[in-house]
Image 1: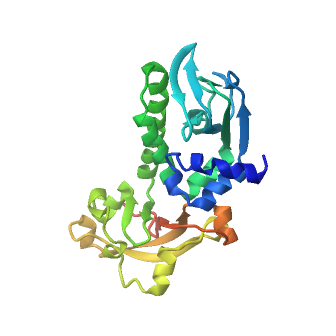
Image 2: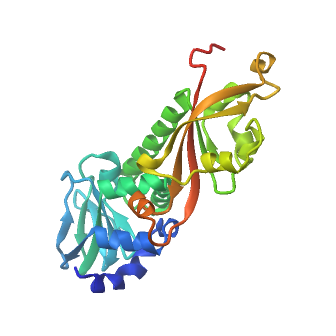
Image 3: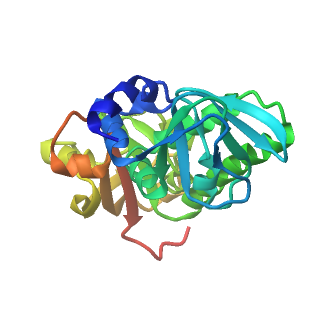
Length: 287
C-alpha cells in the first residue's frame, strides 16, 4: 500500500493502548514496516489452531472474535487481536473474521520484540488492556489472560532468582524497578522504588559516571563491564564486614522507538531511562 494511503490510518494507530509510549516516528515506523491487509465483509482473518507469531491492529472496520462458533467479542478501530499467539508462540486460540470491509495492520514477532526490547512498558500496557476487556465467554478469554499473567510472573521469578542486580532507572535518576537480590545489601525492594540511584551509589555521581549509569546507547553499542560500587545498608549483617560492594555493570539505554531508529540518529524520539545489570565482583561470596 503506497505511503500516501497509509497516512490516513495514523489516527487509528493513535487509538491503540500502547501508542502513547511511541512518538509519531514510532507509529509511522509501524505503518511503513508492517503489512496492511484489506478484508472484505465475512472474510476470515485467521482460524483457531492455526499458527503464526503475529498480532493485528484494526485500522478500519470491525472484526468479530469467536471460539467453537460462540461469539466472544467485537474489535473495532484501535483495538488488537491475535496477541496471545504472538506472546505464547502457540497456535491461535480463537477465530477472527471481518464483520464489515476492514483493514488491519499485521505486527510480526521480530518487529514486536524490537519494540518490546526498547520499551518494556508496552507489554504492561497490553496486559492492562486484556484485563479490562469485557469477556462474554469467560472460558475462552480468561485462559489467554491468565496465561499472559503466568508468563509475566515467570519472567519476574527468573529476574528475582538470579544473583545479578537488575535496575531500571528513569531519566531523572529515580529507581523504577529493582529485583529482590538487592536484599543482599540490606535493602527492601519497595523502599528503593522512587528513590534516587545516588542514595545507594558509593561516591559522587560526577558527569562521567552519569554518562555511564544513564547511558543512552542500545544494542551492540551498549556499555559493558563498567565498574561501580554500591553502599551496604547499615542494618545489614554484611555491614559489619564491608560498607560497600563492587560490581561489573552492563548498561542499556531505553527508548520509545525501535533500536534501528535510535542508532540511525534520525527522527523524533524519547529517552526513557536505562537498564542496569550488575554482577558482583565477589562471585563466591557466601552469606
